[in-house]
Amino acid sequence: MREALSGLTVRGRSFIAAGVTAIVCAVLLGQPALTRVGVLVLALPLVTAAFIGRSRYRLALVRTVTPQLVAAGQPARVSLGLTNEGRTPSGVLLLEDQVPYVLGTRPRFVLEGIGHGWRRHVTYQVRSDVRGHFDIGPMSVRVSDPFGLVELGRSFRATVPLTVTPRTVPLPSIPLGGGWTGSGDNRPRAFASGSAEDVTVREYRRGDDLRRVHWRSSARLGELMVRREEQPWQSRATLFLDNRQRAHRGQGIASSLEAAVSVAASVAVHLSQRGFAVRLVTASGEDPANAWHQRESDLNTAPLLEALAVVQALGTARIDTSWLGEQSHGGLTVAVLGSIEAMDVPVLRRMQHHTSSAMAIALDVDAWSTSGGGNGGATPVLAQQGWRSVPLGPRDRLDAVWQDLGRSSSQASRANAGTAPPGIAVTR
Image 1 (tube, rainbow, N blue to C red):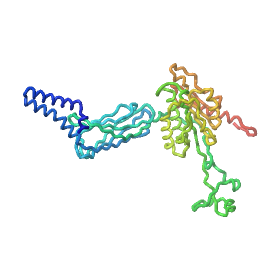
Image 2 (cartoon, rainbow, N blue to C red):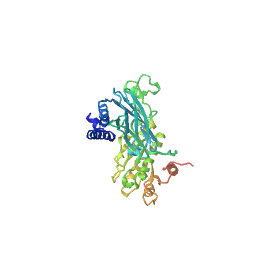
Image 3 (cartoon, rainbow, N blue to C red):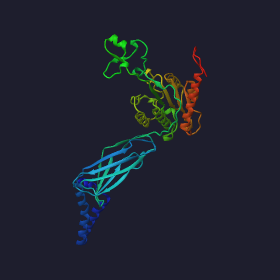
Image 4 (tube, rainbow, N blue to C red):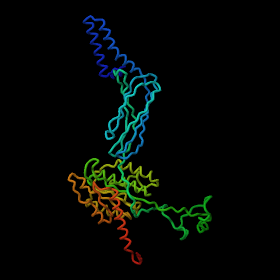
């Protein structure tokens, strides 16, 4: 009852004040009829508060978001399922779901006829132009009587995550060199020639093809041994994103960093669809959750997009190169870069040395500044370090820039093919 009285609305308090005033005036003026009216007006909010206070609710909420991974600018649907297993009926239910302001206004619903076994299902849409990870909820509930005299607040603690990934652009197919890399058991071995020590074998298992039996190893070990299955090298690619704050210009969704994240997301999706196992590396180093994995393209793309959805600008000045090691040697490297300083040149040279094909999209970050003047980006510096790169401005189409990068790669490949090592002839 105490909680119900504290939940009196302005209308309920006005009724109590009016009832008390009517009773006092009736006593002073000697009007019995006015006394009955005052008692009725005073009793209505008190009886309602007692009724609401004695009500027992067993409200249950089931919230689902479809899909939970959505691209920026695309809507997602939120479904709310409410049930009441309480025995006492009530009046009106006022619902308000807590959502971040970037997803839109807070949805509000008014539901009536709450009783035992009551069930309702409502939906609404959310949409964000800003990438990130957001929590939808909790739900706040206001239980009110039909007269609007008393409101009691309740709240559900459960929330549902929603990840808004960067915008992506479909990219055309271009020549990508240096993609086939591998190590350890993934490396193909020549079983047709060589000694027994050069062959990887295992014990014979029932059902193995007898044509795979390695007789030399079987004779030496005294038991039947078969060659291991040949495994092709894995097509791997490293996607590097320079997310240092000092390397970018602009603010908010119109900054060069947001453009770089969108470029990286588009390249990640494209490479995954081309069959590459893509790992994401930022200026802070490699995230173990986004290392190389043997997965399908769809399963490989989702973790990359989720990681890019929460990439933030770093205040660090230097690029972490701890991920450059023997395991990362070779393969394809695609870098999305901002401005380059003198201390970044040795890092870029080392990255180019650890890859067999280094490609870069250099954002002309000065074009994103308030002055709007661009100087062509860091393409000349990258060319001096052996990178094949193209500039990207705020008004350039990413698919066209990607095609230009493919043309530069083709020209470089033809130029390398024209220069043969000593003792090897090149025919045209």
